[in-house]
Image (cartoon, rainbow, N blue to C red; front, side, top):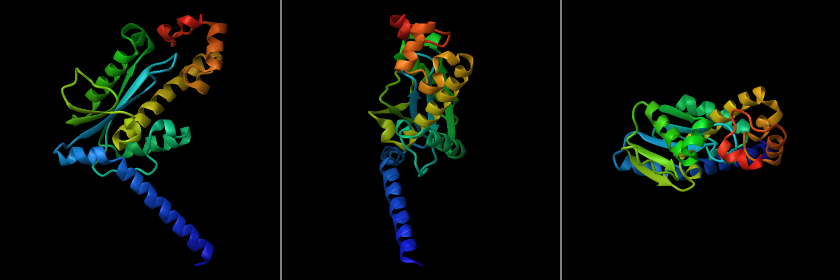
Length: 221
């Protein structure tokens, strides 16, 4: 084997080792839960708390014990093509996945925090078997009688929460892309409903559409 090939192979092995170490570090909360006797460890995260339009989406994901999906990370740190690839891998490998979607009308009615919690509760209800411990990104679900661990920035610290963040993000983005076909003047496909200058200018020009959150957008009118 030529020196260049040896160098490339060694570089590949080092990168793979580094990735394995990163994923092991992100599996600490899961490992602790298994050591405490919990069997079904679920990660929960949401996408869409901040946008001016569209639903908030939450996902609950149970990964197999010791699951190592290369590239798995906080969805915000990934490019769209990476999220799509990981979405498919998570769907293939997960023990179970639940997704909760709360629309903009409900967000206006109950506020975004309560809507987020409701989306998470709905996601949990869809998971079979029922989780016996929940790892949640910075939220406490008072109405859910399951052991919970709230982890600040958990989508970057737990493989289960990271997986949930990707499922939630991709699901929401797909819904917003469909809305873009109905309301192309707002550019939803570009900003996914977030308050970019492009989006705010479109609201000022065209007013709000049915998927806008009135409580988030009324001060732009």
